[in-house]
Image (cartoon, rainbow, N blue to C red; front, top):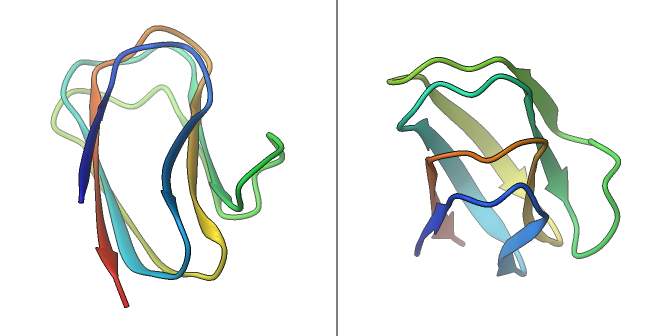
Length: 84
């Protein structure tokens, strides 16, 4: 599954168990991208990516509840998830 995100708001990319999530930064972002294993809330329990540059890729493994991405500013990122 793939999600293309551009807004500065929480996005539930997938609900359920995920083997791997890959975040591709398409355009540099001044701010943060918070990665949450869950379906609600904004507290990072996986990662906070700060000021990523275009071309950066981040991989995270073994989500139990879901993949929730929260950019702090307008962004241009693609999130790919591989389910179990």
